[in-house]
Structures are given as structure tokens and as C-alpha cells.
Amino acid sequence: MMMAVTPVIAQEENGFQKFNVIEDFTDNGFQWFRDAQLLCAGNKERSNAMTIGWGGIGTLWQRPALTVYVAEQRYTKKFMDDSEYFTVMSFDVKDSKVLNYMGTKSGRDGDKAQALGLHTAYTANGTPYYTEATMVIECKMMYAAPFDPQNFKSNVPKNMYGHFPAGVHSMYIGEVVNAWKK
Image (tube, rainbow, N blue to C red):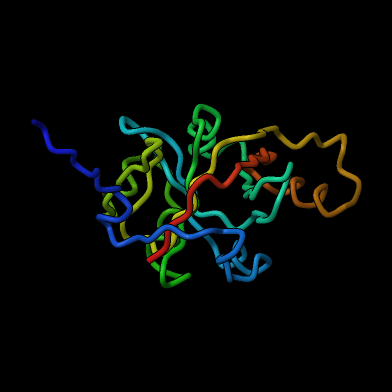
């Protein structure tokens, strides 16, 4: 007779505990993205991450949701376009070398996680994250579309993209399906 084996969740192996974002997310949503987070998408064969400073957290379509933005020239954009899930991660020190490096180097030039000595792990859905993060939020893609400059209603986006070499951003809205923190 075989004994039932309780699977160990990768996040728990790495010191994370699951939490409910609707009830237990205590960070200020206006400051959380401003302080910079790490966005990661891909699969067990290939993934890429980048620092993000724009985003939103709240509810949409009666679901907890994160909105992130990726410019068309960013290497991570292809991973976002090809992925069903993505993660957004926090690190202890907002100006850490991880966020700085991930925000200034391109994954086209090499494996940024490997260069930093980060350890990639995967959620039950196969979504990559780094074990060194202090918080990981996993999202399932609900919507993705590039900004249409014809729909800019003020000078704020017009001025932004007039001098932004990486191109217009795409908006990605993900339903929060899992969240863990240390």
C-alpha cells in the first residue's frame, strides 16, 4: 500500500507564506509601484524580469487585479505577450542592486538573474519568481493591449512618449491568483 505524500509547495520551501491580497495587503498602492517592483514572465525553459515603476492594484471585474505596463522595445514584452501568468515581486531594499540591475540591463544580452546570483523557482502554475524576493504576487492575464496615441486626452502621455525611445507601453491586467510573503 502506497502512503499519500503531501506535496511541498515551492513557495513554502523558500520561506514564503500565502496571504490574501484583498484582506492582508497593507502597502500603500500609490507608493508600492513608485518604489519599484520586479515583473517576471516566462516558463521553465525561458523567462525574463524587469524593474517596473508603474502599475496599479485594486479590483476589476469583481476580481483582485494588478495592472502593469511594459514598453514595446523591452525584452520582457515578448514574454508577457506569450505568457498566461506573470509575477510581480518585492525586495527588502527598494534601491537594491537587484532592482537597479534589472532596470538597466537587458535580458537580450544575457541571463540577468544568473548574473545577480538569483535563484529562480516556479509556482504551481509554472510562473517564474526569485526566491530572494520578500513578496510574490502571481497574476493570470485577463487583458493586454498597447496604448493607442490617438486616445491620449492630455499632454501628459503626449509629452512622455515624445521623448521615450522604448516606445509606447502596453497595459497588462492580471487577476491575482496567488500571493506570498516572507
